[in-house]
Length: 441
Image (cartoon, rainbow, N blue to C red; front, side, top):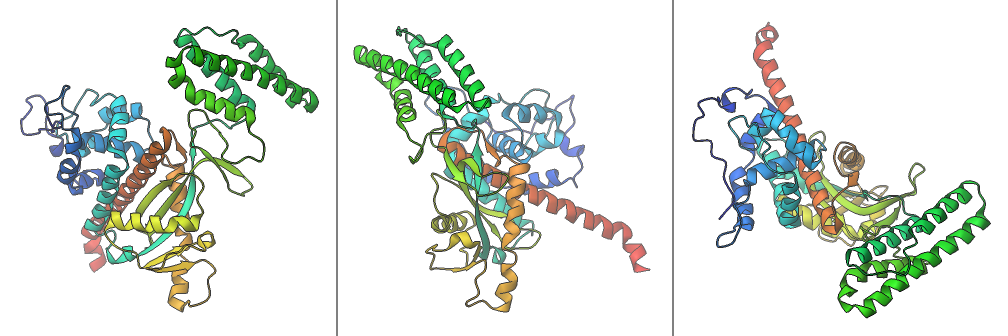
């Protein structure tokens, strides 16, 4: 069975339709009429076809996509967006309901399953839809998307600031927990000893007593090493435990043997793909997360995001430009002819379009020089995505979660820009209608 569809054909004796009560000039009301929901449903509903299998049909595609977009537009958690959906009639109409609903539409955990099921490729269809909506309302034109601005930023991961001792304590705790779950007896778990040792280390470091601190840190590493070797002996005795202990033993060995100058360090046990990115700025020298490459069309006032990519590792900015332009072309359907970047993109290797780097003087005309001054226009977009959206801190799991978070942030911000445009357009129409007689005089 395919996902359920929202049926508004039947009248409700005790409820009047939202379309008869809401303000048709409201920007969210207008946006709900512009978004090509039927195309999205045809594109995505095939993934949830359970014909011939167990289980009930999936929730309506429009409902879930609408909830995901609203969640990222207003920087809400899964629980809060579902709860606030019941309180907001415009949100319900945007998601396809024409009668006011009093119950929660879905369980909040369903949003997690939908995000994982959709993945990067299908969510890029939503980002492409936002670009087409911006073109249809007249916010941008296809010609204007031939010139883009590209830049990268850091999307931090939801982890604590990594220290060796804290990571080792988490590793010890996790090994003890796994052993208890599988009823494997450890010779000693060191729960009380580790607690007192951590307290001593914190006190010595606070008092700047570094010799005592180093001695206690060495003792703590010995404790963690004993637990790890005990777990290795358990794996030898019970081979069925190899799979459950394999990852944590590998991480613990890495933490115990790594040196200060080693590369590819481990910064989090539950997010092993997190990397340390040096920013070189006074207020924040290092950030722990992943790089995100963004591109926007170069138009003053009404630019939109044409691509958003979460990148694994710490690639050089110049090496990411080709993939960024390919993603922008796949999403918008328009090949970029001019690209404006900063000095970090030297050695980009792009040959099929004109790339203009900040500070470049050779081969620059007066018109291009004027356009290059708008290279920094992408910085406010990054600031809004981080401060008002979820790009500042990714709470989704793994590399796939990074990709999903970056794409949904870009799609929701595009729709936000469309809402602002519709609001301003409606205000201009009202001014012309009501003040035209006075202006004619």
